[in-house]
Image 1: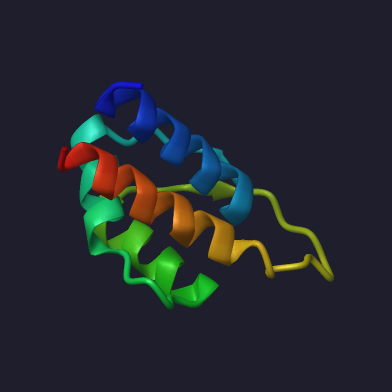
Image 2 (image 1 turned 120 degrees about the horizontal axis):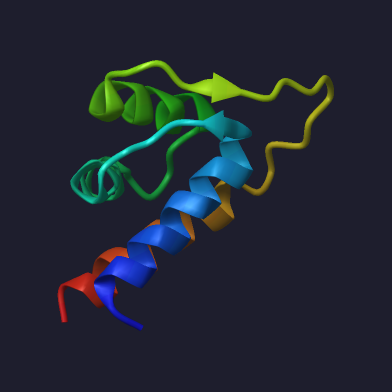
Length: 87
């Protein structure tokens, strides 16, 4: 799988885990988000990175009582995509 496909998969994962409904980041912005994430981030820290890098309005879907336990899957995917990009 090429780096562009990995970045697109990571972008889709961000959208799923953060309930992003509408945004249009460039491939470079997705790469910058990926590189800025640390291994043990909270959901709030991931959101802050997304806001800082993207810098434009994002539309989210809001749900009460949502389970945030899958943020670790997102961070694991970020690590894998980052490692595959460096090969």
